[in-house]
Image (cartoon, rainbow, N blue to C red; front, side):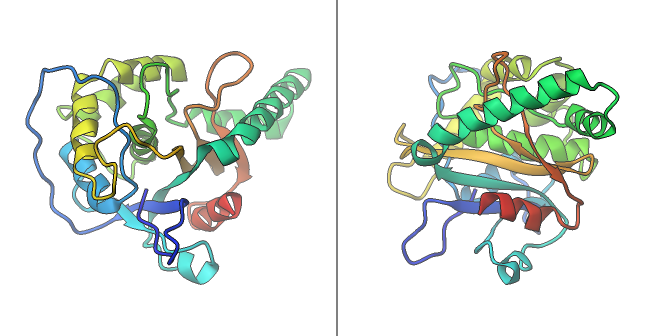
Length: 267
């Protein structure tokens, strides 16, 4: 997530998880269980210290994406492992999520009817390699944290970098990767007091009006990444007919074309 750079300060902000040259910082342990989840600000200056405190290597971090035109996308440093998008939830998701749910149901039924379909096999294998969690009930405004976990978890799965196990984020990714479903990973996040406290501390350090409060302005974070040669949209609130969250497969892509292909979907 990032700050917008248009004169009107657009509600749609974009950022990429990419290499940077910042330094890591340390986070004090806390055993006090926080109440609720505060919304994170869409701002690399806020999100990067959050990631570094949790164990992401200091040479990696978020940067601003200034627009979706090809010449602006060319300014995004490579390699880019993920794009995070903040958008007006009520205006877009209310109509879009039912359509995605129906498309998912139809695809699953079609795959069952033709189990030998090579395209279905490729899609399913790619989806099986995606690090994805459901934003379960009780995590409130944690969509920014979930988007960060999706970005980092899939970068780690793709061996872009390593997060040490002894860090809060390293422990979560390692243990959550053993879970069998997005809902199990979401429930594990719900119980991760150290991640919760770090997220709330980060939210309070925000720079915009309402930072550190429950005023999320009806906005929602999602993440885009490339896994197994496919472009995935990761939204922990996309719930299927089986009551499980699901990643949205937007078709073939490559690490080199991922940014432009994700921008096409966002547009």
